[in-house]
Length: 616
Ligand code: GTP
Ligand code: SPV
Ligand code: MN
Image (tube, rainbow, N blue to C red):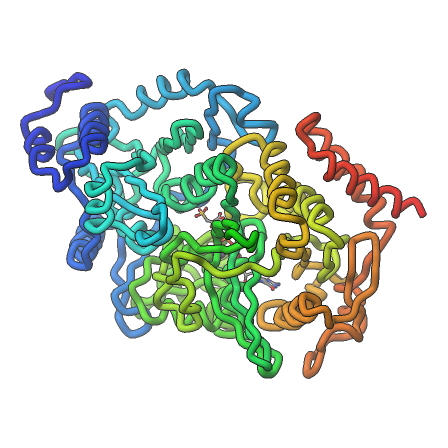
């Protein structure tokens, strides 16, 4: 093997660079540096065309990474199966490498950026040997935005290229824009960390047991090593559109949030837009795609995972969805729960990861149909029957599908100016304590409730499932800087634009249980009843009762027409229990103490008001 030292390139790579379809000097220099470091066999510039997608997908089929599905249910679609150790985001391997440790704050893993670059440089050295290095120019949000959010991902995974084509705007047009401006772009470097020696056979899901998901906030750089999965590898998503964008938003006066965006139209034809921050696998995609069960109400999706919120000259919050696709949780997605997602993926052009294969060349996951097929090949490749006693699909299995295939996508999704935002809904999974819905009295109280948002952990991240943890603004794993400064940013935006101009804040819980352990609230399309209450409250119409959590509806305040729900269930869903909140307060205090001087005074004051109310 020839040993290529850093700085020099093989003749083949030198030729690939000469033929590069760009004049962007900074981009060429970076690509050269990365190629010299990672030593791929070739450099390939992704143009984003359909022909290219089909070709790469076929290569993935030939490599055993993709299984091409039968066209009868999901045309032009593929299933991929990951390494069993590479199935979710890895929060303990995620780092915010700001100049100072304080910059990363008490909620992030931090390493000195110089040391981290050294470590990563060692790992990336030769890491693409035997592979193709793909260069993916991409933009999050519209290329027609005033200030398009440009980036380039370099990756050695064709699975990542195909997935990025669904999740973002990629390729030729983006590169042309970069060439035209010679402007700034976020450098997002990814390697699965599995170099191939000459003659070495590849595996179907190359990855490395050692994983690093690293953000350098000051230089807006991302280095991701060792994982091929989801948010670890599709760097436009959580790494850029949340971690790096939250830093840019802090500097520039806007917000990058882990929120869906929903357009709601009432029977009178009045439209409002609301966003909702729920932690991973807590219902964003389902809420964004809901089919209202109440007559005359219409819901349309603007976004299902990420929201960028700016303020216009009238201090009106305006929000865009920066993504082009959905990377949705498969389990629990079926015609009875999320028909709009089923319709979207049924149009095909979808990549499934870690679902089960049916005997007729299609895919299945828990909740797709009420009854499981008699035989499946599970996500690990083993035979499966309903008696197997284990899930056929991984709990964090996903469908990756273009947003344009969603029939109920609001036309405003395509508007780079975004939509005006009336309300921010917070939520999480709590078996107890948190009522179905409450309305904060003020922006500051809303920020307090966002800071103390709590949820039971899910399979979307590696680690224990079902453990209650604080997940502020549903952003715990995604805040790219000191969380105390991030809370302050929310408070400061309220001061700058006027608390009365800020979206009203609500807090929901679809996951409360009855004493027998079942869900108290039916959820999904029935959540439209909560949306109606919120909508009416925004119009100054809906009734409610003042509590220490703000205003909550009684049974009479909710439209429950046609809903079959027992009194016991309804009471369990709506209950505001002082005892439960007295028990909750020590956990809140322990959490707030983490932020020391950085905890905004307004948040502390709201905590004191809650404690006071609980004493009376
Ligand atoms: P990420 O994409 O990981 O950020 O997750 P998400 O927030 O988009 O969650 P998603 O909508 O995919 O829902 C996650 C799981 O919660 C799925 O299994 C859903 O079926 C389930 N779920 C969603 N909404 C509801 C609801 O209203 N009630 C109940 N009981 N379950 C729900
Ligand atoms: C999440 O975990 O919030 C997801 C999946 O949406 S991932 O893209 O892996 O972050
Ligand atoms: Mn989702």
